[in-house]
Image: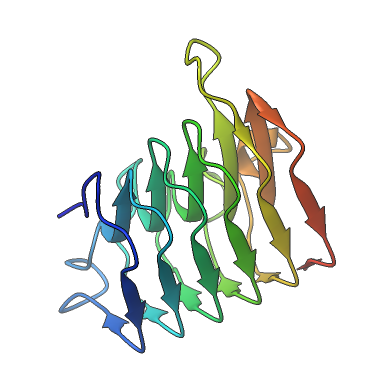
Length: 168
């Protein structure tokens, strides 16, 4: 269930997000939809089930000034998985020191470990976000397309900082 617009100063920390088995796991871990001035920190995400829209942490629709830090996300499925996604006008968020392992198995398509995106038809610009000191390991897309990258940036994105990340 998404945490909806108007929520502020929410802290989600030290939580295990997991399904019963690898085949009946979670589609979404945490979804901030217009949530601001909040944090997701020191959480562990496992058994995420890829169905083309799976996300461990999803920030949507002007979720601003949030901290996503020190989380661990492990994914062994395929197709369309994002560990962390910032979309549609999100501003001034900090994505720091997360350990993201796995993602798209060879031959699958879509998804990136971290997605930073602003819809071109949207009047809101995704800007001022900092993505730093994250570790991305064993992420393999089915081809060399940008949609299967360690970190993907697309659409209306301006003045974001991506630095000191380790992608293996």
